[in-house]
Amino acid sequence: MDDLTRRARAIRFLLTDSDGVLTDNGVYYSERGEEMKRFSIRDGMGVERLRRFAGVDVGIITGERSGAVQRRAEKLMITELHLGIRDKAAVLRDILERRGLTAEQVAFIGDDTNDVEIMGLVGLAGCPVDATPFAQAAAHYVCPSRGGYGAFRDFAELIIAAKQE
Image (cartoon, rainbow, N blue to C red):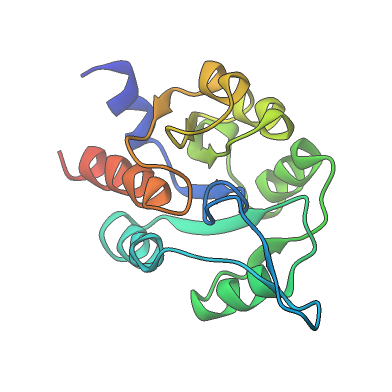
């Protein structure tokens, strides 16, 4: 068994950044100042498939405070939602303690410099193909899809496939 498969098999919880992973890294403003973000429906199905076929739950840790991300998390029944976070590693430590997990049992997918620290702490780190070079260097797996266009789903399917082997 290769190292990537071994890491993916151990995963019990998946954490994701939002902007640049679940979204295309863009933000849209209406003339009234309403913020809008684009999410991939396929990524949402990845959350459902992780739960159903791999027994892996999902959480979001993002530096942004966004009502759109909160609504998306509610739709996907993601209860481990952390908005406006600057120290993602501290949130990881809290999650490990509360959920009785080890770092090797957690995966994280991120796309930028503020994700690199947490990517180095988890058992499996991934990033979209259009992530920064910093995130790509920290990743165990670079997804073939771009952020907001199926990268989360790619990462989810990697974990599901490893657990079904």
